[in-house]
Image (cartoon, rainbow, N blue to C red; front, side):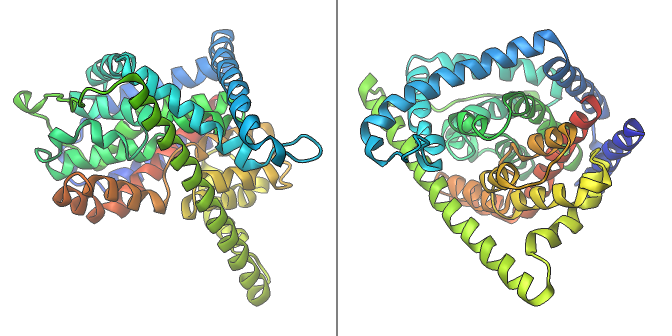
Length: 394
């Protein structure tokens, strides 16, 4: 039965994308089918094989070491603020390591290691997804640099992009996550779910964009021109990335304070007036979607409330809700919900992406804001598709 429901779920997700397609006649179905097959293969390898266990285990162990090194700096600065039971706060244990991870990204970027990696993987992706080199590079770069920083690297080409190509770039940015905060995710979710979601979302972004936003890239337009940065010294780059990481940590912390407090307030108001919390109400709205993703109906309402929390706030709030709530989910439900949460698909990302682009090119920033809701719709379908595939494989 789970296979029947899962297949129906994939069909529903693809039909929901098709229903909002800008040009149904131009949809290239062959790349879509190939990428869906690749998603199944990759999910099976990462979740159900010894090779996958070794890869994910190595990735997780690497981040575990990095977090332990980050703790050295955190303890030196904030050691006196540790709780009596030696347990650090969410801010110190989860958010502050972002500063160290960001510094490492800056080092790899300075020595051109990241640029070579992003260009190489992007080139290989372009041979599979039926899109241009720029779109493929942008997807990989988004998963490493983040949804706002990535547009700086393609600044020179923003003015040349039409609405359809810009939509694809924005969709990739919203469907992925930044490598700087992957370590933070791994303190809240199982590493195999985080890694699987990152890999599957990379292809899922192209699948949904190919259906919602089909177009052809002319050979003379299929050019990747990454912005050349001014020559900086090693310590100048390192300092910039450390400060960028600190700004991200502070920003995420501020958003968590605001969103969690507002949700608590709204829950209290709804409970007092309607006798049901706002999150429980959202759970009923999202329950049918959770069910077709492969979650049993007995758990669908609670799972739906977690998924909806991510959409209306952000993934960190939803992850905290998942880990701190007394849901008693099955392993399969936990896997499905976890991979759904690993992306930037939420309302606040519309403002982040359009604002980042507007700072580089006002006209294109306004264009991104115009299709913001359609962008969020597509990115959310990417999360649904990834979670449904995991539900079938698990």
